[in-house]
Length: 146
Image (cartoon, rainbow, N blue to C red; front, top):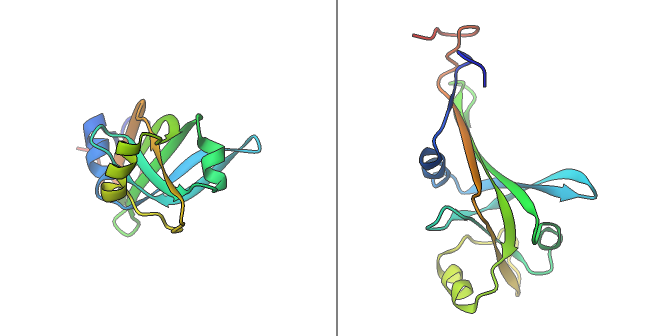
């Protein structure tokens, strides 16, 4: 971000707090050597990991298992010209531990596409970044920086 452009960088703890306020985000991964984006429901785990639930046979599981991916969540108020965006980047892995799967079956995110065989995917939060725009305030736009 540029000085006085109205955006404020968010600290890691602020990013994770904001992510708990929205139910849907987007996983960004590589598909056929090109960027791909897919909206999904999610939850944050106790350690800040992003948890996804998807059918075991989904293309998404094959695409992201063992890969470094990004997960973006945001909230925007276009009328107020304000909002925030957070990106969590890290390796994605299917949760295989039976006790952990049982715990996530009770507390994890629901799948948008229910299936008889669902898996949970964990994205470890190696890098967490975020920005907030407050009311369109900028030296160059509506409002002024004080």
